[in-house]
Image (cartoon, rainbow, N blue to C red; front, side, top):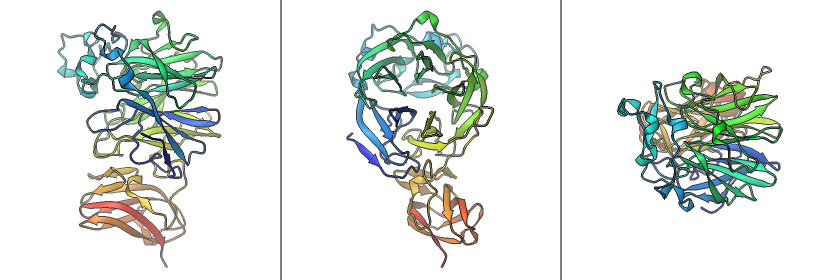
Length: 439
């Protein structure tokens, strides 16, 4: 994929519609914000063989670079003699309400695994046909070099290096651990820490070379499914002396649709569950997971996360919301919005269907359109009105589209910012809507 530019003025999703970068880890390097994530390209398979780095200087205009790493160039997943590392984070002994990720990158109930088989003795990678897919990454900068930590569909993990935050990243080295979703954190004293795992997370201090660690010093179960609702997707940040462990959580709906956080006074824990930052359960009928991070940029803190689309668990798109801390260090939960880091949609502005931030009743987003059926609804959050408005619709199909602003008729809207709910009376493909003042 060649370089792509987005001019969506910070509205969600923030990248061009064909660019699906989930699992976003955001970092600020040299005054610019970069997001590292996996790359969705097809239905039925999470991620792909490629990474692309997204970046912005103002949170309004985004650039997506060319391929930064190619999983097909990583040889160790194909080496049958290569050492396997699964016992640390896949050694499940306790009941779990969620699923095992062992077949084609999807999940199956724990009950399918015979009770006589200990999960840590299963070669999980044997169930994944394509072992060179690149799952969620993270990146760190030290002494002018950028270290990209990645994991693959054979549950191996590694690190590659570059002179640029956008890559390309080369000279990959395998790390002595197995699992998914690595995270890296550099503390104020320059010490670097590495995190990884699913259902139970592990942590270890990296060596000075940023490419190795002492296996004997791994701290196991720093956050767990039982104590913290932890599913996967570790991410670490620090603010005002508090360490924030951000991760997908199963506490709502029994699946990891919400991004939660736990805090500690140490990068290696123990961590205490604090709450939920955002929940993407209503982004799509098939919404299954969330994965993201928090980061400060130009004095404002944001949460970076993804929403799936296409009535599928894949095609996950990068989204951003502003977040706010309380005096005690806790984070207020925020809603998904259409405006993202940008301004509310203005009167007369064309709002494409894919900007809807929540859908219900069978509606879903496909490409740049909003597909709706009879009785389904979608939310546009937020729109700025000067007073009463009427809606203009670009759509195909049978039926009509109606709208309310904060639960009231559009013609009764007052000056201010409103949450707009669209409701369909039939099968419709909504390309866009506009709200114009009533003359």
